[in-house]
Length: 97
Image 1 (tube, rainbow, N blue to C red):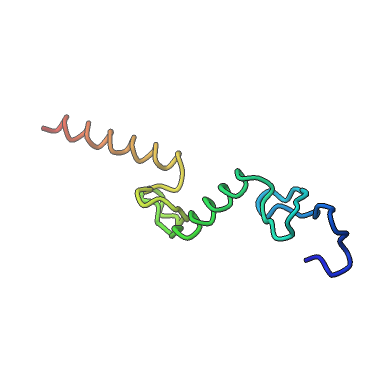
Image 2: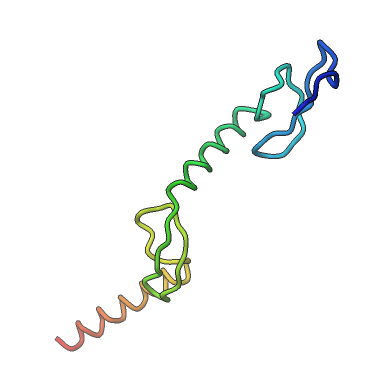
């Protein structure tokens, strides 16, 4: 916040972007972001944070945080190993029939 007497009339304010942290100049003292891209990125990130919830990985049983409702595995490695296990189980079932 800029205190009274620290800013000269007619000069731009030197502010810090809330998203990227870069210093920028603005005519207005209440500007929060340096550009519209930073504004959109910040708002998208805030929306994602509100949707985050904990899940348990179906492969390894580890708890992980995700913002997607359809995510079942904590990583690509777990997803791939679960897929391989399903394929092997299906093949062994076909052989016994």
